[in-house]
Length: 171
Image 1 (cartoon, helix red, strand yellow):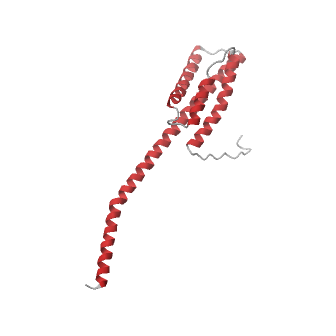
Image 2: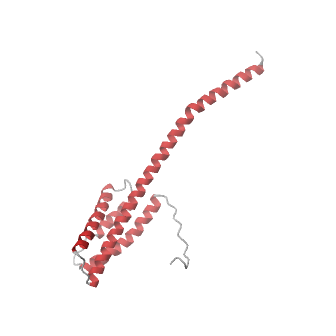
Image 3: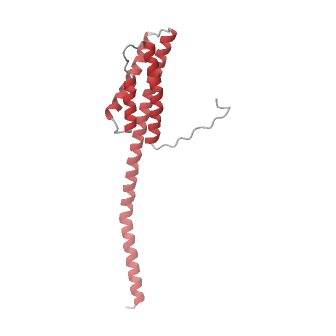
């Protein structure tokens, strides 16, 4: 056999081998990367859902304390149904905080877990506080901790939040 024939045979064999390897390993690599991306996306969605729940719970508590403060300072009286509804929403929000407090830094960041602990602590009345002072203190604490919780969510979820430009038409 002449050398040109050997080059052709070796070239064809090499091409066939590389094609076979590509056909065998290519799909395996693609499936593995696809599954990794899927798992990563699902974990991100779980974390986003957790932060959403936490922020909503803290917002409900803030609304509760703001309403109670208004009621106390203005002398309003809620109907019995309104009081029950408000107390139920507060209990639900506290249950969400309790859940994430128990989970610690599993789904949310450690910093967010500390915020949850502080949110729970803000719900405990201190000695000698009247109802107006209690709701005022709790509201202030919730406002501050909500800002920190949102910052934790932005960092943990790797979000890029661009502030909306202010225009006179959007007041």
